Image 1: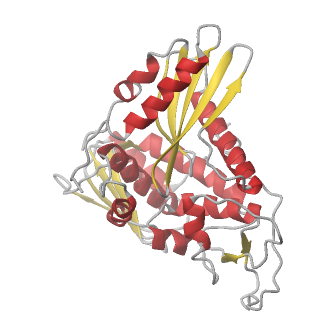
Image 2: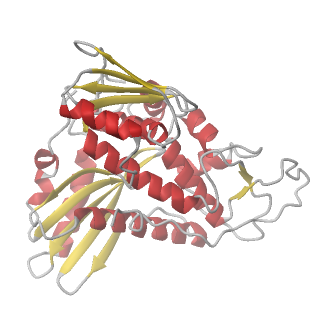
Image 3: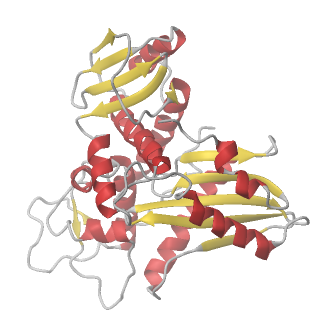
Length: 229
Length: 133
């Protein structure tokens, strides 16, 4: 759950109460924008997450009919917004400036009440906290050089990650390259570390000679534990 | 672009005998995308999170076993309820799960599974793509 004194949350609450329309611009490492229409959040962008256009373009490339259904487009708009908001509401100090406007020229709106967005971002922060014993979105990981004699079966997204992890890469950079959610990719990378497919790279001079051992972790992720009590 | 109301989206599964609740969850993030429940005494977020956790564990198991083949359904049988979880993969890299909870005395498990599978198949064709290939 997000702290009650999170300044961005407080600001969004006021915008919701007054049913404002406009753009809340946020500075800092995760600078970005939160678009509000009559007090409802319709979009959020952050320099640290893939924007909706990129996600849709990648999704349409992989879609069986070359297009994404409007149902999935609405979900992807919501995910892009929440993914960005997870960075913007991280509690790090930042300046915020709201520019009011008559209307917003946006398509594929997320239509998220502020309370719903804050609740979901809080849940994700709880999960990120669970993962933090092993990795964060900016932790370098690399493909485990040896799996021994065993075989594993991977999903298509895990395959897409593992083929890109020959050299150290962070979940964030993998997500941006794949046009996927930074949060979802971080969770997936954590699972792959658990399975021994990836290892956290502590040493910048990660061995290139095939001598590295798998680095499985005993930590586990639980969505139930992340629910606010 | 207007979102589809949950009552409309889940109309096919709401007709399943013994229906208690249904929800659609993003399998990667655990985020609830839509939900419908006939009883207020059940904590739907807990059910959704639990379903996502179950799918995660089962997927890890099948991954480690490497016996080829993807998870399709997970059926949890309790004294009084069924929890039926169906995985939906409309395209590579995108995976969702639908959880349907039924009152066991009223439910026909085979019929329910069939209807949930049909729901999953039709879900992404309910809405025409914005442009054709």
